[in-house]
Amino acid sequence: MKKILLLLAAFIVHAELKAQKKSFSPLYQTQLHISPLGLLDVIEHNVSAGFDTKVANRLYAGADVSAYFWSSTYSKPLNGFAVRPMLRLYNKRLQTDYVELVLMYKRTALKEQGWLGMDCVNNVPSYEKFDTYKRIKEVYDISFRYGTRQPFFSSGKWFYECYFGIGIRHKQYTVKYNEANSCMLDNGEVTLNFFGNSTGNTGRSTFFSLPCGFRLVRTIK
Image 1 (cartoon, rainbow, N blue to C red):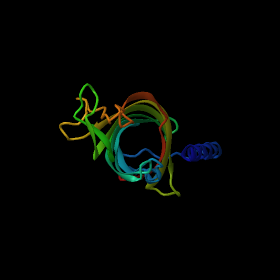
Image 2 (image 1 turned 120 degrees about the horizontal axis):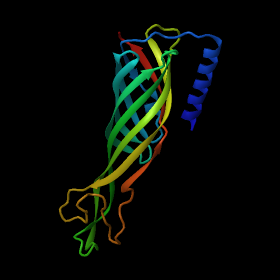
Image 3 (image 1 turned 45 degrees about the horizontal axis):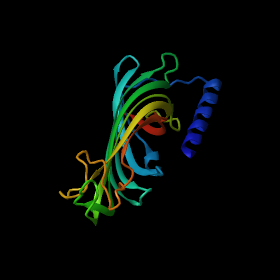
Image 4 (image 1 turned 60 degrees about the vertical axis):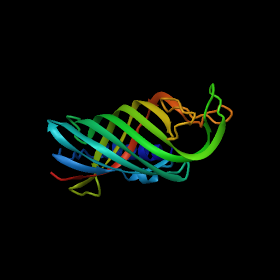
């Protein structure tokens, strides 16, 4: 919620500045970007960086890569990555504003401990074993975004970007456990405990996404 409010405030200030003075930043050849808000993510802390480069008049292509290293939800280390290839088209008249098409693939692995069912007979475990297993999360997303690119403290090389958008996201969880006699389905989606309950948080879901963010960028050409 705080992130959304900050972005709304940034867009309001941006609109006011455009109304007072139309000062457009020139189009560039290549730029690098970093997303500092990933370190403040309340669920999955990450670092994110990327680039985009000009491929045609007002059209740019690039990608972001994120590395995930901690989960606040479980207070445990988290391993994972995300890749976001994108296409960006700048507004012909107002060259500070753009629209983007962004694809995303994300995969994270979190180690957990629990009682796992073993040697199932008719889906009923013969006994339980307290052990460590991995919960794998995979996310697929496609989104359309609107953003603005503005000079950062009147610098000729540094800029900041704010964006928001809408998309469709598919998320799926699997549980990975290497014991051959565990009560694991072939697709790895359910590990049964003694009473036939799953370890939770497994399965698939598809829903709308509302991506938004803030980036620092630096032109290199």
